[in-house]
Image 1: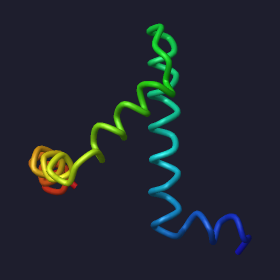
Image 2 (image 1 turned 60 degrees about the horizontal axis):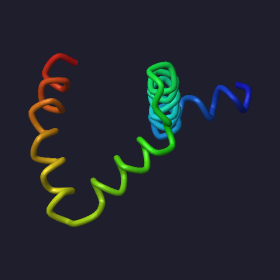
Image 3 (image 1 turned 60 degrees about the vertical axis):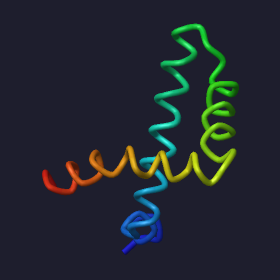
Image 4 (image 1 turned 45 degrees about the vertical axis):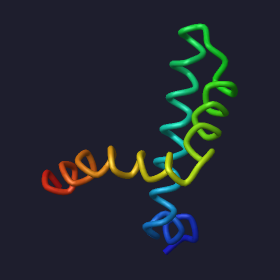
Length: 73
């Protein structure tokens, strides 16, 4: 098997590729809407990781969406 195929078979590699593709699509949509993607992503991460309370709020609000996705899969 080729090295590229072996690397892509690892679950972490597939997840990272999906995350990067998601950020690229979001950047294109933000740029098309006239917003600066770097500022938007900066505000997203600085707001989410500013305090531990905010991280827990994100996890609490994401739990139903994650569980719904797991039930469908």
